[in-house]
Image 1 (tube, rainbow, N blue to C red):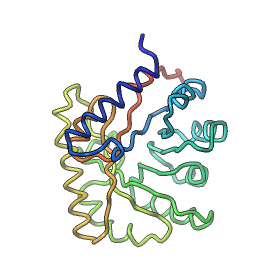
Image 2 (tube, rainbow, N blue to C red):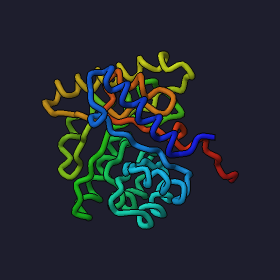
Image 3 (cartoon, helix red, strand yellow):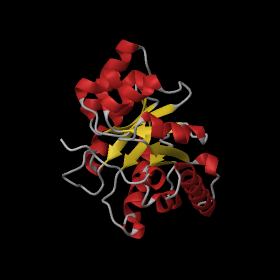
Length: 231
């Protein structure tokens, strides 16, 4: 069985190769290790390898892990964020990838004003129109972008997508192309730069990088398959 350190180095090499293929340096691709469900002891193994950027999708895990690990680490919230959890999350994370409605963006703006923060966020797009996933539709984001960009405390950095899973990464490629094209159109419409494209996970991050990803969210390729507690 491969160690976390070996898996990490292998994944870094794959990211570097994909970046070169896309005409980029590895430093231009943010590598987020998705540590959801994994305990601090396991995450610490990756920290010992020099990695500092982690992604979590549950507020309870963020609340447990962040105060009990090095303050030099960077944390990204990648799960669905409920209105009543915004106040807990904002002081603990460097970026929220999953702003999926104008309503939650306004809530983040209000709480950020109370806390004196300027959170960086990404707008989650559901470009497959999957009922099981959250996110703006293409029409919805066009309708909301002007109002979103007027929020004084929220720094909108770009877009995020979670495409439908397919074991063949090539079948996922169109969703990445779609997100990049949508970003370009929004920049043209608004006159505002949206430099971050958060797209690509363990199964398809290489294709995502080829299509313009600036941030990839990789978990199982490093840590192995997760075991979830039964409810």
